Length: 125
Picture (tube, rainbow, N blue to C red):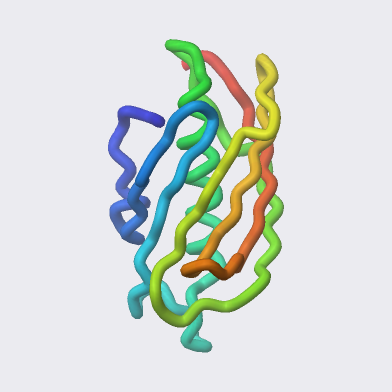
């Protein structure tokens, strides 16, 4: 993972449980500020988990002096969440020299609520 501060993660309460060997796990507790007008967790929260989890997983495989950036993420929302917490498990599917593909699954307890596939660029800092 990046050694830089992550103010957006702090804003939504996102924390990492682990990031090693091309995988990561991060989480966000559900709180009222993260709900949409319908009383469910806003889709952007699951997206932010997937995006951050992907970056965290990929950073574990980067060489010194390399960085990464999101090219695109496709996310499928499978179920709404009203309470509890979201946990995102991410793995690197394939890492090339300049592009990586990653997969994230977002859970509320044991229930899969979103699945994402992302592409990242790899570049020198």
